Image (cartoon, rainbow, N blue to C red):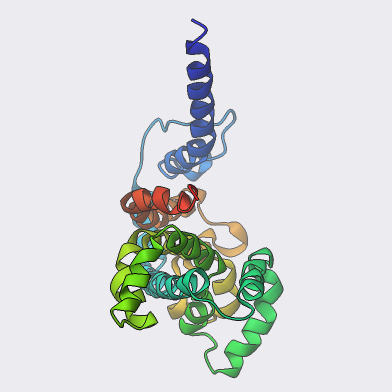
Amino acid sequence: MTRRLPALAKYSALLVAAVLTLGPVWWTFTTSLRPAAESFSLPPSFFPTSPDFSSYTAVFEQIAVPLLVLNSALVTGVVAIGQMLTAAMAGYVFARMEFRGKNALFAIVLSTMMVPVQVTIVPVFMIIRGMGLSDTLLALILPAIPTAFGTFLMRQYFLGLPLELGEAAALDGASPWRTFFSIYAPLALSGMAIVGVLAFNYHWNEFFRPLIFMISEQNYTLPLGLVTLQGNLGTGSISVVLAGVILSMVPAVVVFLFGQRYLREGLTAGSSK
């Protein structure tokens, strides 16, 4: 009996964590199936008595969902690919190449993770405007491609790969670029995949920077477009708003499900060193 107590406590804690995590998501979904008048009934109801999917139809009627999805997919796709490439190259340099000031430069890169985006948004906005990219999707893409966390993650991943592979390539006359692209990059695809998955999920749901940079509605991303469902002074239907939220979650959930194996591998990279 005493041996079962630790397992029982573990599963009980996991159950509580699952309920706290999935409870709001389930309430969001069920509320999107109820009339707006029943959305805030007390005590709250987690099961709709008469499910109604008309709120999902109303989302497509009130906002240009295909355009918003296209904009978000373009931004998140380019950012994810850009972060995978730049993080892999930067991580390889910090892991395998020696140069003066490497540790200091790496410390500076890591320190940028402690700076909130709200602190740098004004100078970034000034640079974007100076480049003539205001109110364009490039304003969201270019500043987001460098990633300090991705660089750190890929550095740890490359440190876990055999050093002898690079030494053997150097003996065969391979340049550092050839060694990276032909040997280490293929072995680091799992790490690059986790950088891409994290980048996609973060920037798919990003709201703050699009709110600052975007003016024209044709350049809105999906999170920014969903705000218009609230209506003037928040007079819109909460069921329609939550239906839009559920629809916006689907691509991110799909990407996460396909990339969760890489997520586990990436987060544990270098843990055995």
